[in-house]
Structures are given as structure tokens and as C-alpha cells.
Image 1 (cartoon, rainbow, N blue to C red):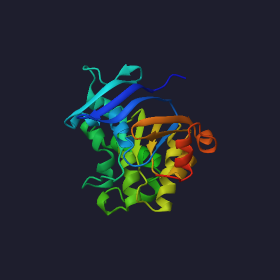
Image 2 (image 1 turned 60 degrees about the vertical axis):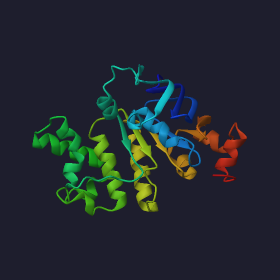
Image 3 (image 1 turned 90 degrees about the vertical axis):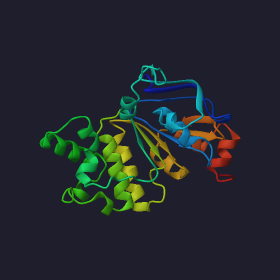
Image 4 (image 1 turned 90 degrees about the horizontal axis):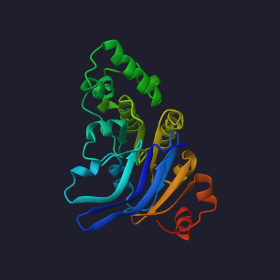
Length: 251
């Protein structure tokens, strides 16, 4: 199977400080790839490089290449806005817009010029169902999204990304600070979404990585130590540093 994203010997620097060092890794369709590692390992920076969100940071530079559907995302002719639509991002802290639940979900669709009310409702319903949120909110579509719980707001952000019909989902610690019930619902949604999207999940919870991912990558101080099938990485890692991390000796 051809990878949907292929990272080849990629390094990233902020001014003279290396944040990622010679990373090579692939993401395949319909898989969940977890990225684990202690703080300041470059996990979030890596995600932001995949859809060029780091472009806005002064002093950011890179070497190597990242291919999305076989095309170099750093090619000067790339439409960055379209790239970010196709590789959607969900952050650790949910950012609900000060609008209704419905308007949050269809915000991107409206920007694309969709005005038909029936079509917008269809997008909202399908996206909320995919995020396991429809049954909770189908009678509250016109309530303010700011009234939702933290877990609901995070799933709403997932629905808003899904509404743009991406090819890849990037999730940067989406369950950070959430209760176990909300975390379970997000994990259930991710398992269901795997049939439609390729997903990269950055998590500081190694147990979550073990539960939901197909493969797991371990980053340490910007270096990709190893990437293996999840069951193998947790039961028989190739590198002692990985074993020390997943068994709690550091991190």
C-alpha cells in the first residue's frame, strides 16, 4: 500500500535550534499512527510541519521533504490553504467559535461557498455523527457551542474538521485534561473514523496509544527512535530508550 504521507530525512529548526532531526516515517491510509515521547521531543512541531502551520513562526526552516499524495508539500506552487483543508488539525485545547453548534460545524463549508440549507444540514448531521456527537446535540444545534462541556467541544472540533472532507486527521493531545468518559468517546470516534481517514495522534498517554493505534512512533529530543506496530513496540521494543519510556522509567 502506498503511503498517504511520506516524511523523508526531515529536520526542522527554529533559528539555530534543531527541533526535529532527520525524521523519516510514513502514514498509510486507514491507519492510526500514535506519536509518543516526553515533553519537548518535537511531537507537536512534527504535526505542525505536516500542514505547514509552522510557516507563520519567524526563524523556522527545514531540510528534507514531506510528500502528501506523492507531492512535496513545501513546493512553492502548493496551495497552503487547500493543504490545511486536506490535512486537518485538532488541538489539545478545543477552540469552539462563539457561534451555535450548527454554525461551528458548517463554518468551513460556508467559507467554501456552500449556501444551500439542506446541504449544510446534511454536512452538520454527518459530521456530528462521525464525531459521536449527534445524539447528544441534535436538539441543541442552535445553542451556543460555548455552553458545551470540554469533551463535547473537543468532539465538535473534530466534527468541524471532518466537515471539510480531509484525507488526514492530525490530533495533538486531543484528550488532554478530559475525564475518562469523554476520553473514551473520542477514542471510540477515532476507531470508527479509521475506515475513512488516516490519523496521526500525538499523545502523552502511552496507554491511550496502546489502546487505539495501529503503529506507534517514539520521538525523543527530536529524534525518531523507532516506529513499529503498536503491540510489538510496547511488548518488545528494539531500543532500550523506548523500553525505558513505555515502562515509566523516565518521561
